[in-house]
Length: 115
Image (cartoon, rainbow, N blue to C red):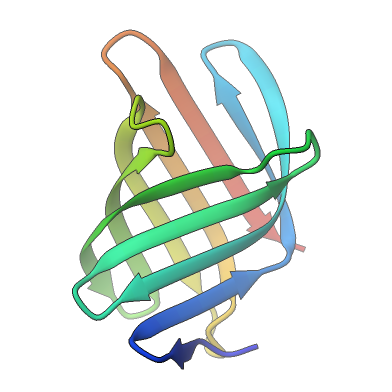
């Protein structure tokens, strides 16, 4: 599926697998990813998780080079903040994504790749 504008939102999807770690605790297994970016650069990225509730990040796009994007994001509870990088293929499908976020004490690392 290519990237598609839904009204004023650019939407990307990806089917794959990933893991999230909080300090040494994890992994939380992640599945499908969805990313929406509105015309003002606000981004929302969420994952389906093997442990019930998924993970969600929101923030702002800060740069784009070709098919590689960078955003400054926060976790849904606003505790963890940091950069989110994702890459899309020529058809607009998410091919990889990573987040390294923290709160000054704890560190959240997330990696995801398309299968």
